[in-house]
Amino acid sequence: MTIQVSGDDVRIENLWSVGTGQIKSLSLKNSAREKMLESRNYLMKRLEGGEVIYGVNTGFGALSDVQINKNDIENLQINIIRSHSSGVGKYFSRAETRAIMYLRANALARGHSGIRPEVVDKIFEFLNNEILPAIPEQGSVGASGDLAPLAHLALSLIGEGLCLTDSGVIDTQKLLASKKVAPLKLQAKEGSRSSTVVRL
Image 1 (cartoon, rainbow, N blue to C red):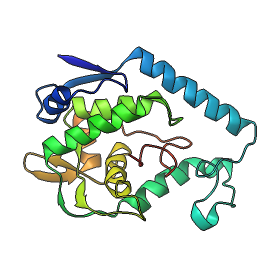
Image 2 (image 1 turned 180 degrees about the vertical axis):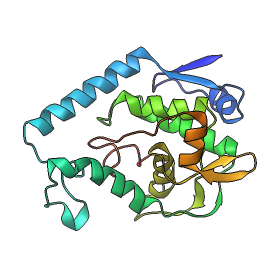
Image 3 (image 1 turned 30 degrees about the vertical axis):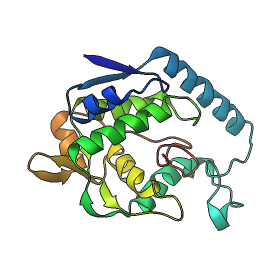
């Protein structure tokens, strides 16, 4: 059975089935893909027009008035994920991790974040191939309790960090290589705090 995710129709039954592994095939609904593309195109048009957008082509917090060179925007996305991957303690269970990934993909599928559909596609590719990020149960960044956990999710998407397996944790890069799955290459906005890759 395949679930097509639209961003608007999560049911507790589906969440349970995805989390427990009863449903192993997920994909992005065409209507959601179109909404995401519309949002992405709007964002890129503003960037290409030279607009300064906080957290997309600027620094964060005290560095919000520092504009990031166009050539460094992708590195900014990676570095913000690395800096937020600060969780500690034991990892969420495999079922909890699957549920987190499903809910994250559903939220992004709403098309409000300005990121590419490829990000949701990659989350589903991970889920469908049982590639589950190792997400520590404890950790926060500032006042937002979800930033550290979701940074660990995003860290695995880009081929870094650790993943869960039946025998324990494994280096994400090794697991991706064994399953012949390519890591996600982030683009503008897709790793920043103002985006919803890291932010729940």
